Length: 227
Image (cartoon, rainbow, N blue to C red; front, side, top):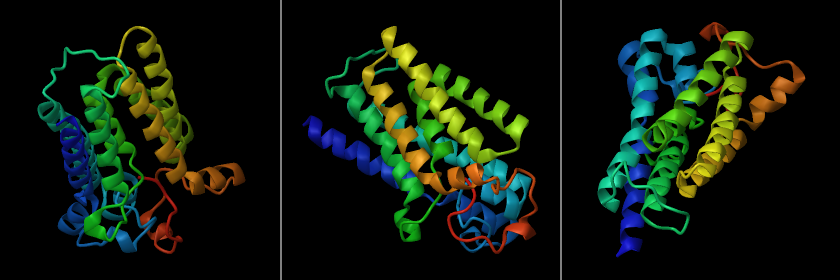
């Protein structure tokens, strides 16, 4: 029975994550296909650069909500409350982790976009908000500080997910479910892998900064940028 619940969490999370919010919103606001512009990513950063600030705000909220809803619906499927604290043993909290990670996978490799998508950062933090709001909040603060000081969204994303993982380690020591730490770790690994091109450009000093005009990014090779 619990295996069926796990499978349900994965399927629901993946389908939620697969909703191509960036593509839908960019077409609605600016009549553009973000899969053909800039970094070819469906994430907030590419939408900001190609379709504008209003579209980017909507995409950010929608991608965040995908992660939140995946975990919230998984709680309903698994039949657990926000007050329940588990231990690592592949119990009910593991279903929440599966749903959150599946939403990230859906966002990055959407079945509706022939397995294309974004980088998973916003959806990751949506899932983390539903699992551990304090970890998500601190991670978000690290992101804002990093981006504000460096203007590199990719660097901010990497700092944020690593910082969130560190926070979850501290929370786990103080009794939070180890399953949530697993979410933080696997999610961070996925995001780092998705940003490997950005890491290379950061080290080479050729990474694009926040505020670069969309026109300057239309000829970038697929995979550049964030989201």
